Image (spheres, one colour):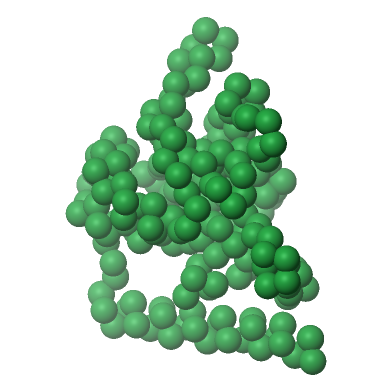
Length: 203
C-alpha cells in the first residue's frame, strides 16, 4: 500500500527499477519514495464544510499522527512561516525538515482541487526558503500541495517535478469499508503488476 501510494508508482518501469535499486543497494531515498497520495487525515475529525485554518489547527493538534501519516524522517519546523517579500507578508502553512532527504519541506493546504496558480505561489515560497532558510549542506527545499483533488493534466503540463513541487490528495473522511476494501485490492494488484515487471526485467 505504501508503494502504491508513493509518487514512484506512476513512473515508468525503468525509473521504478532504478529508484528501488538505489534504495536497496545504496540506501538512497528519493522524493518520489517519500511523498504519497492520498494522505488519510481522518484523525482530524473534520467532515463536510471546514476552513483551511480549521484543517491546519487540527493537524497541529494531532501533529504526531500527521507526521506518522507523512512518513518516517519528517521533523516539524514551523506553522504559518512568515516571509516578507517586496514589503508584503506571506505565510506558509507548514514547514518541515526531512532528515533522509536533507531538505526543508514546505506544505500548503488547499480546500479545493489543484489550480495552476498554486504552482507560482509555491515556487515563490521555495525560492525564499532557499535564499533565507537553507543551511550549508542541505538540498534545495521541496514543496507539497495538499489538495482535495488533483488535476492530472494541469500537473503534467506544468512539469511540477522540475520545480520541486509535489501535489497530493488528502481525505478527511475514510470511504465506506467496502469501497476502501475494493481500493486496497486494486492497489495491491497494481503494485504486484509493477513489481512483477521489475522482477521480470531483472531476471
